[in-house]
Length: 162
Image 1 (cartoon, rainbow, N blue to C red):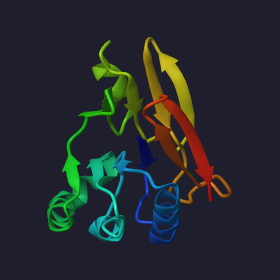
Image 2 (image 1 turned 120 degrees about the horizontal axis):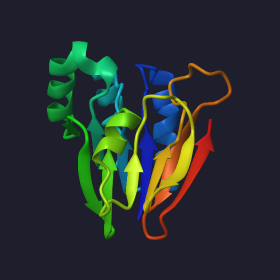
Image 3 (image 1 turned 90 degrees about the vertical axis):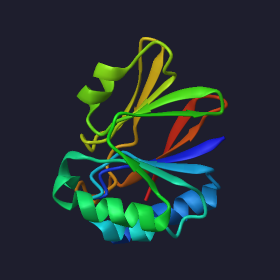
Image 4 (image 1 turned 45 degrees about the vertical axis):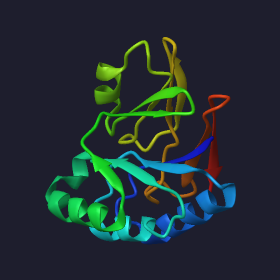
């Protein structure tokens, strides 16, 4: 099972459109947004995806919480406070926006931890848990735009630059 990872989109709709193209081309089965969506129109854009979207709120989402919640409900996007626990393809996954929040809640049964917030690439083992952040998605660091694709059957992470 392939899942797509993005985060910290910060309302950059041009980049969101590119991310959608990548996830459709790669035929991921689910998409995870690690927060800092920023405005409801990002969720409206993500609704064009042919696969389910799961997301957590980020620190820059607090001012638009009600609008984001309404857009998520309207478009069938699962939006929650983090950390969010998911179980797909026999993997226990923990999703949070802030890496400190993720690490505070990691437990031995988690095989994959996903976070955003830093805009920096991260791919490392913390104990028996693979921790992944694809890095820059919002266009704030020129030439570094990327999303992640995770193969849950092999627990293998990769990035796609755009």
